[in-house]
Image (cartoon, rainbow, N blue to C red; front, side):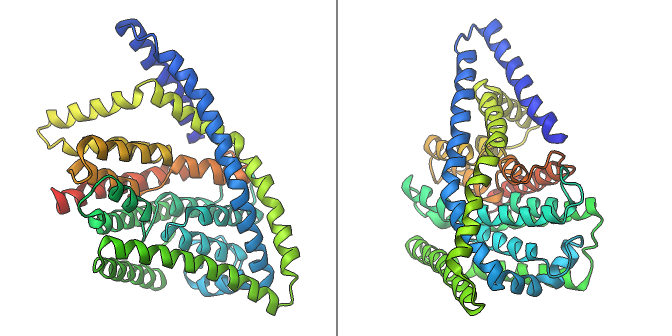
Length: 410
């Protein structure tokens, strides 16, 4: 229901802004631009879905081998003590636990192409135990918030963009990104737990969160010892080795269980095309609304209003120059990436705004895109508190990013 109101608001606000620009400023190009945005956004939605087909088929096939080979059940048993606390509505040892873990691990390593199909598989398994098929369950919402909070250990893409745009030290935003995305994820878990009345003050979760904090700190310290070239080589190598290890490991596990791995792969891969087709309407709906909102100038008006308000309060408004990336990130990953590049181009890769835009880009994920794709793949219409929790996690990431940027670069 919340997504419905937000979707309507995008169009109404965009239309009002466009009318104001036409009547008071004589801007004859605004409505053609908005119409162009509807067509281009629809095309983009289809191309994204089409582009996902091959990757979905590959990883859903691999996941099917892992499922029949018992690998997913192994992950489920290992994670059961933690996930029974964080996802109390998932039956103990259910395969969804392993799929959720695989998705989160892929996201943490920045393996977007692998993370999406793994996440869609997890959503299908969560839908199997969902008693109301058109309404998001508590485990679905917690899983979505973990995705939208964007926990990433290796933000390799952002580092590459900084290097290409002439940053003196592209890796100087590495630790700030890890800190910001960690706070975003932590806030998402806490907020969702409050909504779902999950008790986080128990030994298992406290030890797990403490261990994660230590692990993140260790990774941050370890990577901070390398220069940008070494970091790029090591992070890329780790990602590729991990992916290939997963594929080979699943195949070997299937062979040990005497599974016909080829037939299992084909059976799982068949779902790739149907899943990609199923999410097209949802992507078209959200991307067209975002495109119209941008083309109308509503985003620019919002940024200008924030900058004026901050300056009126006597505060430093330097961070506002990077806000387009933060505001666009929940709506569109490619749009936020474009905003990040534009900010670095306009103000310099090593400027405060340029660095902050990179931290914004890495601190959260595309909330509405993830909601549209994941919920759309299983036909969820009523998202309950998913949008609220996702956006609050985004807000925590944005606030954390601003303070961290001032701490490191201000």
